[in-house]
Length: 371
Ligand SMILES: [Fe+2]
Image (cartoon, rainbow, N blue to C red):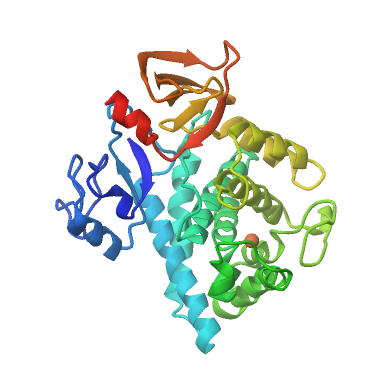
């Protein structure tokens, strides 16, 4: 089963997991259902952005997620309300309905409850690379990652709630940046980049004006999440003691998710490169203990991912190895050219192979020859 973005690419695929409908007992999408144009439209109408599809080659492999689908969608919906509020505020300067802010806190509470009660040694958290709604997916992901860090740093539930709220809203200022700049697919000009760099201040001002009930320790995260411990960040070039703890944690989660999700005109990093880049930044720019927690406890190659190994073969990560985020067990199914191989498990801790690429799905030549 694989997590995918809800768009035309899933037409003709089979649903891997049920999606609840508006009425109990009447799911919008049943497990095993063929996704046709009508179902796709129904999902999009309800604002469902992510679905699980049954894998073409290895449908039997399940990949339990750290956060329940319903919780993730609730958080995403709450964030989307706040984002709409910010866009309206930008265009009309009208104050949003107060429930938009309250929903953020309620949904954060759900996340905190789930993360606080989990005792995974290694968290399986899949992600989808940059697509249309990147800010939405990124914000939810950063909230989850920040909470995982906060929990391992020993925070109580009250602190986690405030941390989660700040993390979820860290990039809300992006709703206040002109859309042409935010969604520009190519490199930004210097001038556009400067406008983009205003999002921390814009976000903080928006929260201050429009969601005054959100605690300052949460809203400060919007202002400070691009500050770096050595003073090299923005908007003010603050140094470690003046950067609030929650902002330091969210900065780590933000960089980590951004590097993992990068692609296109930017780099497309291998899991090892993500690991090394994070290590390089730890201590000087990013809070070292928070980096360490992610690199030890969040799978860089999530269970259920399609991967290519350093010998060119293709397979799927089927089991995670505790405290070893780079070396899951991989079930190899095809050679470099896509030619089927006798299926066999490879333990990446032995034998010197590495995952060189995390793929969004099986390459066409593999599906054509293996199925
Ligand atoms: Fe940001």
